[in-house]
Length: 272
Image (cartoon, rainbow, N blue to C red; front, top):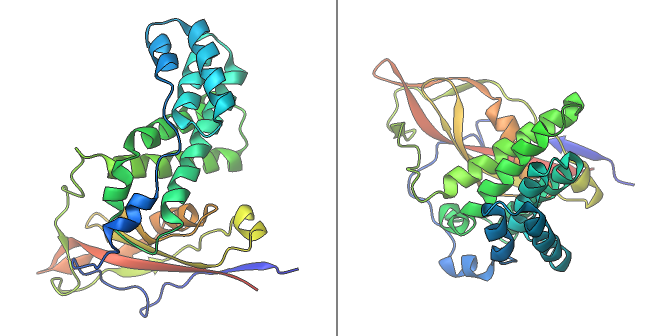
């Protein structure tokens, strides 16, 4: 049986400045992926009217018919919570949050790169709901172990980052003046580069490959705007993003002042 071993590479050969001129795949690729379900508007309307009993009945029927309906699970969790049914609410929110994970994976899996903002705009609302469900799941689970709590906090951040990125009202990194490597006097210099974890699901499915992230190494010393250009399923993309957030570095400079710059991060996942 193959034992997994993660190899995370972050060297001068692959830690590169990102040009603003990126060639993306044809937009036709994006049209091949669709949201798998239509929300149960009846159940939602009943919830919004305050008729929680009827809303629960309608939403339970919806998820029985289509267990992949993220929005129905989200509102079912809200309705159960209103009724004080904590265990049921927790289960519904757990399902909605994990469906958010699956929705992101479904968007990435067929693609090698692309204009992900355009791709994710279509699912902004369910991703926002999944992120909120992750938050509520944490609140409804005060006895979560440290490791599970960290995993769920990471899941919420992951979902919320994509929900924010897909928001048409959100201006991408407007708070930063982001420079290319050619524009800076000195480039950002990495001092610590944590390795991502190889997830159990990825190991079970023998997933290998490379996650490529575009990120802003900001003037304030934080890695922000982390964004996959190439992704892997079963939590590997999320694991790479989590590791990227923890990178320590000395910011780039221009004329003696710290500045923000684009960088590429590449994480190789291999089974040996």
